Length: 234
Image (cartoon, rainbow, N blue to C red; front, side, top):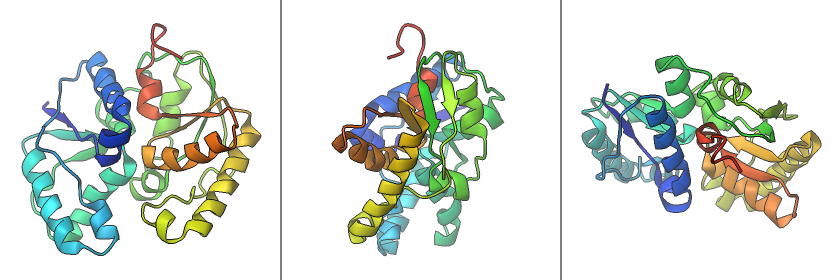
């Protein structure tokens, strides 16, 4: 099976460790992962902001870049959802099979215990695209439950949006901030040391507020927790 990593813009620019963690995790599980250097944006930001023509150009580039692979793994539910949900409406042909990381692990590799170790109290925020678009369900939490040393605590109001929503957070700043404040309140109720999610865009939004409030709660992408071992766990 030829597998490619689609790192996404946010991860490539701001969170390269997430991409490294995804590759390390997959290789530990015996998957040979390639990183096509021609990859760029999937076009989600452009489409969401009304630039359809520009989004189509990027979508066609995406299919050209990843077309030869049996599976494309993205550590981002929103970008995976863009390809699977929106590309057909853009009349894009030969769309590659794109999976969120948790989907690929559970549905394709048939693995829920990846041999990870992360000795911390963790709560999980299911991001909107992974929850409502991809419908990944319990796959991320099933993976977290099998991480040695990890105590998973439920997040009140877990299915409520954190308020990020890409350009929504810019255009509707006050509403976005209020939604994030509600999410932060729920996170603090859990007593967790770490907030986990499968989209760094949401973690950027929530994590920034947690840091400004000096809450002491860290944020970690799912890939980084699953890639952790006794030697690397922080």
